[in-house]
Image (tube, rainbow, N blue to C red; front, side, top):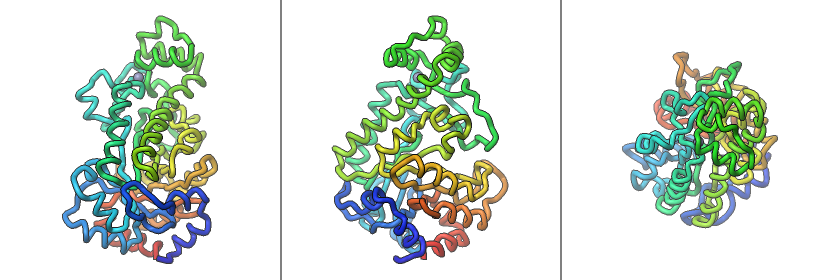
Amino acid sequence: MTSRVRRAGRRLLPVAFAAAVGGGVVAGGAAPAAAGPSIGVKIYDPVPDTAALFREWKRLGIDTAFVSTTLAESGTFVPAARRAGFRTFVITPVFFNPEYLAAHPDAWAITGRGAKAKDDWVEFVCPSHEDYRKERARYALSLLERQRPDGLSLDFIRHFVFWEQVRPKARIDPLDTTCFCPRCLARFERETGLAVPAAAETSPRAAAEWLLDHESEKWTRWRAGLVTSWVEGVVRDARRVAPGVKINLHLVPWGESDYQDGPIRVAGQDVRALAPLADFVSPMCYAHMLHRDPAWVGRVVRDLTARVAVPVLPSIEVKESYRQEPLTDAFFAAALDAALAPPSGGVVFWSWPPLAEDEAKQEIVSRRAR
Ligand SMILES: [Zn+2]
């Protein structure tokens, strides 16, 4: 395919991207799609006819499947997609895990108000919980061993925040961040050599107020390190288990200084430390959901590209969510153009079902891929 999208992308490909997508042996052995900007789609549930699905994707110029663990585990989807020539990533949720929390109530992350890290469907595990860290790492590696995808797409590699509901001008109260549980406080003391006042050791609120007043910088770095170190360990093991495996990281779609250094201070995503561990980073640029204009997608890509040395693959939404106003064809087309503009490494559509049922948006996609 010699599409405008591909030509534009190839001309501006960073070296790292060409190496990442064109590089020989991959986990599972089959050849991935040819080098070029990645046109991906997130898919969560099985479809009745996978052969027809793959034909549709090819018609639209889609070359990469981001597959839920449910779909990956349901049987034959990943190998079939690989055989059909698609690059495959399994979307692996990390610190979001309602099932685990239902069975392990001691594992909840705790906010500075002493509350469980829960907001609607968003439920987060404490990132210091060693059993959980090990179990999740084993699970991620087992996906590689059993499903043989080309890569892992690590999702919810962060601290608790319902970022989908954070408006552009909002302020995020530090007391609503995590994790101030006794396990984290003890680990912080052990690993930094700092002592939290005795009164704060049993009160998340007192701990949060003291830490944010006295050791804000150290606390912020340390809690981001909990996320980074998990990714570091898993990536090291993944590259041993499946040489050539690709790693994609889902990132909150915030500029470095948005929400007062929100990426690191709230989400605990130290992008400069995380990106070198990965082959791609993928900010979830859901402009309509977040009450942004479509051009904002391009700003997120440019801001992130300036901070990392790997290709940035923005994910964009196909249909409205969390709001009544429809996501129009014009909005979608403008967001897609912004997502694909240099220095982008491609785009990932969220998600397949709304694209499957919308011929006008399919036309927009295929026109840009033709
Ligand atoms: Zn904790």
